Image 1 (cartoon, rainbow, N blue to C red):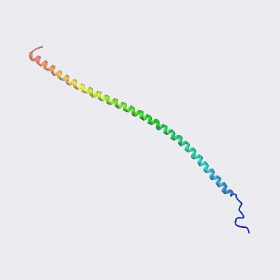
Image 2 (cartoon, rainbow, N blue to C red):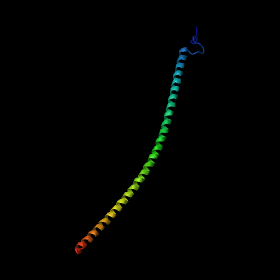
Image 3 (cartoon, helix red, strand yellow):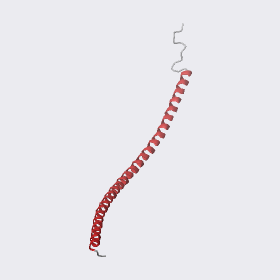
Image 4 (cartoon, rainbow, N blue to C red):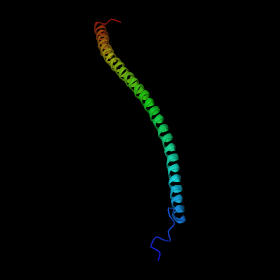
Length: 115
């Protein structure tokens, strides 16, 4: 009588298990290659987005500086306008006072009968 292990070949894997292992290794290798190529593409995209963010930040800084300069000019122009309005008001009141004096002079001339 032959024992339970008499039909087995010593040290060799069955061919079906060997083929299955090769398929698993091929699938894993493909997945690894696919993940690696996707990672490279994503790294390029991240680098592009970082450079775009840096350019945007630089442009934003320039725009903020320009906005600050323009706001300073607006404030300066407002002060000048307020000063000119104050001067206008002062000159207008002086003109009204002079007009009043002229009217008084003319009225006094008419009362005295002078031409």
